[in-house]
Amino acid sequence: MHEKSRVYLGVYHRWRRYRLKRFIFFLVTGSAAAILLALPFVMEKELFSWKKLFGSQKQKSAPPSPKSVPTMLPDKSFEELLETKAQKIRSFEPKRVHTPPPPPKPKRRVAKPAPKPKPKKKIFIKKSSIDIGKIIAGYNRAPSLGKALFIARYYYKKGEYQKAMQWAVKANEHDSSNEESWLIYAKSLAHLGKKDEAMRALKIFIKKSDSREARALLDLIAQGAFQ
Image (cartoon, rainbow, N blue to C red; front, side, top):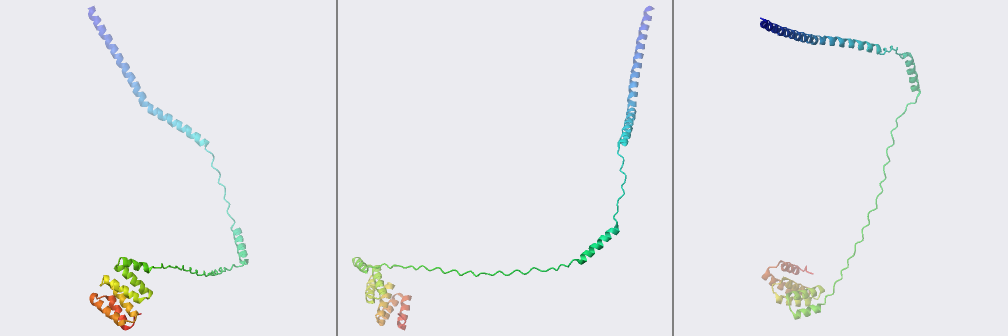
């Protein structure tokens, strides 16, 4: 019997402690929820009071607006008086006549003197004296067409037509078809007054070579135009 009552008492005490813990738990959680719900309203109210306080201080510290100063309007009658006086002064001023600037004077052109022609330099060519004797001696040692023509040409230019004719014959002996030897021979005959012999020699050479130079010389001698 005593053992059962002890068991019941133990169970009862545990149940009371459990109920007490639940009550404390609900009480704490309810209080915390109430505080969290009321916190925004409290903060909003405090913020509003702070704004109201600072707004009133700003309004009090703002400087007073300046009083409007009346603007001074110019007197039109005084302006009109000044304008009339200015017009009278302008009427007494002499009018300026615009005179065009004088035309520029034409510049005198100074004729430049014509450049003097430079004196031409006279070139004197010294003709080297030809020792024709040495050339003839050289021909005698070694006869050739070139040497014979050179001697014939030399005597023809000197006007020694008889010697020119003789050396033309010697040149022709080296080469009977040489044109220059025939022409020197015919010209020398013509200068010596032997025109018929000159024309006869040219006709013989023309038959051999049909030379244009020989034909032209023949025509000049025949017409008496050869000099």
